[in-house]
Length: 147
Image (tube, rainbow, N blue to C red; front, side):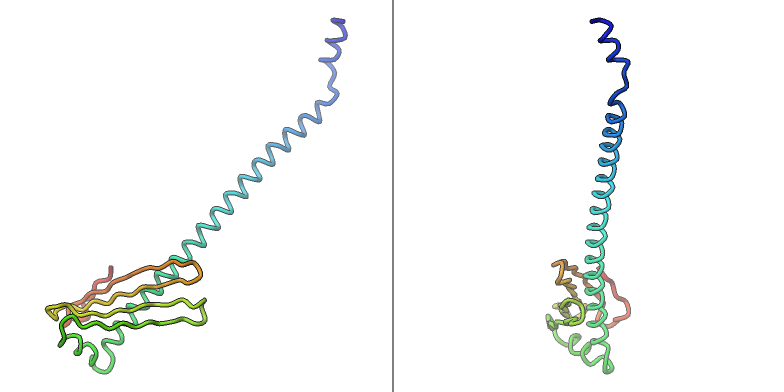
């Protein structure tokens, strides 16, 4: 009986199957981890892209508001300079890009010294929005600060 036990241990029958199964298991685990990493990275890239789109929508809103103030020899700017706490709201829709929109608010300060433009860029597909604010002195519109 002792001889039969030694012969069974020395026999290589089935060893190849065990090696192949272990190799397949290791390769499957590696493949799944690579797939998971790629899916996570793809979601992150899409999220960053949507955030950037909302940011640039908001930045465009600041530029639209600023340009509107300076058009026609600054007529609109003069209106804001002459009135304390004067506010104007506008909304811009981008029809060709999933109905993205920009909310623009222009407001003069109570002392009529500062003008603030607030722009909210809304990426409709993702629901992401970014708010940017531009502030400048009413008498020196070229000295603007964006936050």
